[in-house]
Image (cartoon, rainbow, N blue to C red; front, side, top):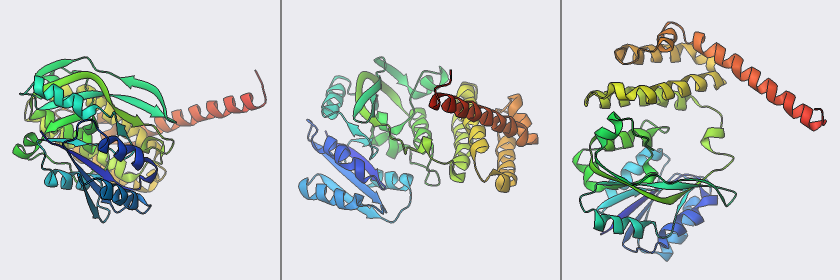
Length: 329
């Protein structure tokens, strides 16, 4: 049984030794390692080439920068293994991860997806972990329908390749944010026999320059609405709109907060208003919350209170910092 591990790389030089070493040193050896350098401008490609020379299981592909979704789709196209796994280049695996997964496949030969838990790492220290309860599900539709607690991220799932090929499931190449969550929703909607194991096999590295800490960009805000639009479309096919209410509320919360923190909002507000109205009209049978209707009338009615709240929170934070600096209690 062969596993294909797909690793997209873009300017991840500080993390690549840990990432790639965690794959080539796996206790289970029948691996195909597909690394796609997506036009890195640091020395990531040089590091990847060093590992390719050391391990013949590595196929290294270099392309101009086209985005993580294009890189992953190329990996799917190149994969020869029966199972596919997507590893982020700034994270790494437990060394017995694929041996554990192989043993699970032997015990459960009808399984199409295996989900596992994660450890969060900061400054080379374990800070928290998620170890899900072991369970077998008949199909992914029931997980969504029953609002099962679920992590829809690609790097926590081993996926049988035939699921992707037979259902023509790929990453949306115009998305660079939330693309893996949308991808996994498609996978779950197309899959029967899903195994969740109570093992934390993935090490997720928390860094100070992570996306969540960086400046909000226009593409992130656009991708949020693309995500909503496409997720509703997929779930309407299975009559799962009602099951989406929590996820949609969370996603719109992120969307409005992102708008309130976007530095160039004023000059782009007409674009965002027009695009939001387009999505709202398309799915108004699902988007029934009063605040979504208010945003349809005028986004500022939602964004301005958020901006005022942000200013208040930052003001309190600055006051607290000042008091602390001068030992004022």
